[in-house]
Length: 153
Image (cartoon, rainbow, N blue to C red; front, side):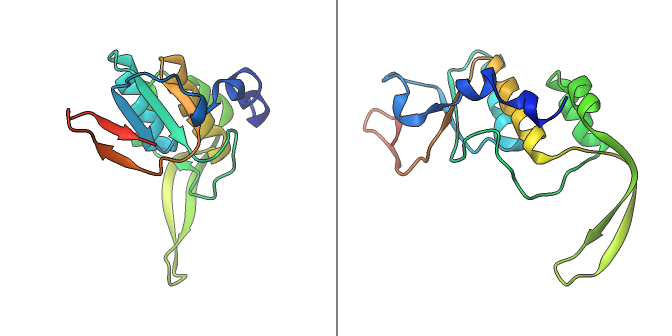
């Protein structure tokens, strides 16, 4: 499975934030990276009405580390994504990392490597499949209303 499978039907599910229905949602998750999409998945699976908002339109590139550890794979297993990730990823036994001061060091594996383009799309797609509304746009103003609800625009 490659990045090309992350388009099509899934990309059509990412609607502009301005087209959200005018109704009350339980949770707004800002950012559809690994943490945001995972949070949206767990909340949607528990029955919460969730909006998952990312400023970018998917699939989108993201420069970032692309190595998945055993702990990351355990999280993906809980989300029901372990097999899909293993099919798309490449196993490696070590990675070379650099500090901000350019000191290099090797970390022994095992690891799986997967482009963030693919990982982020898989995670956001999972959240959408569990009922989260997946949108693109930016939250510019978030404030509490007098009745205690939180409003975002």
